[in-house]
Amino acid sequence: MPDIAPLPGPRALARAHHAGERRIAQTIEQVLAAIESRAPDAAWISIESGDALRARAAALDALSPAERARMPLYGVPFAVKDNIDVADRPTTAACPAYAYVARETAACVQRLIDAGAVYVGKTNLDQFATGLVGVRSPYGVPVNTFDPSRVPGGSSSGSAVVVAAGVVSFSLGTDTAGSGRVPAAFNNIVGLKPTRGRVSAHGMVPACRTLDCVAVFAPGCDDALDVLAVIAGADDRDAYSRAAPAGAVASVRALRGARVGVLREQDREFFGDHRAAAGYARAIEAARERGAEIVEFDYTPFAEAAALLYQGPWVAERYAAIRAFIEARPDALHPVTRTITEGARHYSAADTFAAAYRMQELRVQADRVWQGPLALDALLLPTAPTHYRVADLEADPIGPNTRLGRYTNFVNLLDLAAVAVPAGLREDGLPFGVTLMAPAFHDERLLAFGAELQPVLNRHAGARGLPVACSPVIDALADSRSEPTFEVAVVGAHLSGMPLNGQLTSLGATLRRTGATAACYRLYALPGTTPPRPGLVRVTEGGCSIELEVWAMSAEAYGRFVQGVPSPLCIGTLSLDDGRQVQGFLCESVALAGAEDVSHHGGWRAYCAQREARR
Image (cartoon, rainbow, N blue to C red; front, side, top):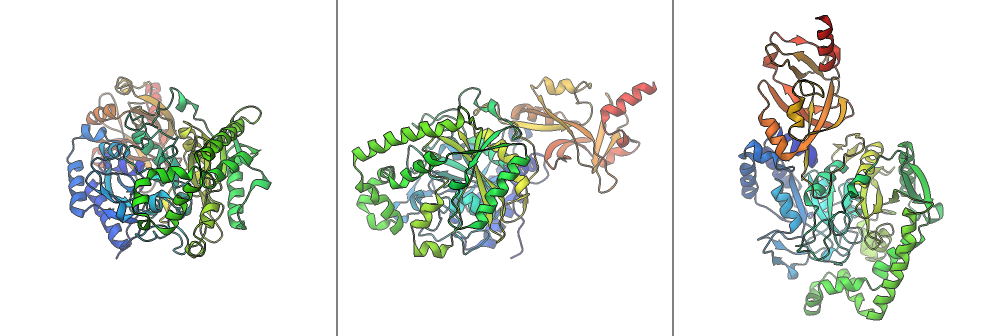
């Protein structure tokens, strides 16, 4: 089979579809070819038929521009961990005897479909989401995308692998003890574990219902943010769902000046893995170089909380989740899953209350890092202390898994948000990752920090070399349930103070930032336009950097704005001088006959000012 190019992340791919640079049908054929090229692939448990995917692509391609504009993930293929329901499809939780056909689609998946995303299939996992290794499944072991001898990470093993391999643009997993973070680290992608309850768990097979989170795997932090914007929101069908408090997202800030907590030397445990230790040291230095203030903190209460998750009565929640099934069909479980789950029988109700009292004491101690003298903005920890081989788990199915949770198990117990970020490749070629953590509802702040840190440590995501833009702080959403925003770059009469700027402000658009294109464009004054307008054309040589402004607006406003763009102008993808890409004004080259090349002015505003001075 020929080598199939990896799919870009959801932000770049959705913009390409919106701009008409590629049809969704083309994207789906690429997905199908990638799936075929990797077959058989234990990362998948079930895949939609080619006919079903092509039909979905055709329906999306046939939508009107206004309908497309209301879909922020227009045509973006995604996968779902197979403990999350999709209507009329089996949900197995990696246990064939437990499988059932879902009657309705999980809330988070339905939001993605409504936003224009294309559901591709269900991915493999550690059975009943019990494990951080990714090898506890009767459907096989998903292959780590960097080294087949290494564990892929779990429990969301398949979801991480299909993103890292470039088969889909993003995926959903779940995270109770680190299942949405460890696989991300082991496959060089971003793993977002949102605040508990911020994404509805309705339609998800529970592991520990009070702790479970829907997780997002994506190439970059900007991609994860776009997915979070779609799936976040309170849901009355989930008793543990909760909305972000008003103003919570306003706390987003840059790394420069932020106080970032790191482990003291005596708390850094890598179980003899010096390459992982070196990776953590590099990540700390990268944060320092970005202007963060590095502060060491006492990890003791966090470590004790982490131990309570599996070495205490919280394991009874796993038993309660599948009690009827495990009591009726104990032999149907994977042996390791059964051993862990049945361990709940050793704990009494009194043990549970005692553990709850101790956990509350640990929460109070842990919360001190966010207050008082330390006043940290985030923690920066290793995602996993080392990377085990599949053979290590065959020799000892439980010990390595326990050690992998050293820096993840406490996060949901202490009500923190977390984002796992790729932190470069080790000397042996394996990826290393770090996790940024902060109190509940600071998800956007963590993604902003991660967006700064990731490209400094590793300019490529996954195993297929997907580029990561060196971007500044992510611009936050107004709130967790606000309408998704679209950005458009303007270079001419729509600039601030220019004649057509009112077309933007009347639609409620706001100026997001100023900047310039990459040095690969020419700017022309188009003849016969009223008011005078420029045409921006991409060139292969002799290009210049041209001044621009980036404006943000709602999806509905974007659709109305785009419909009013007159020929020969059009909306396409512009490359910026900081490596990012954004939708913006371009011009058809056929319109350049008789046009004046004004590129040497550096922008339309400067050209107009000089023209007025000559009059």
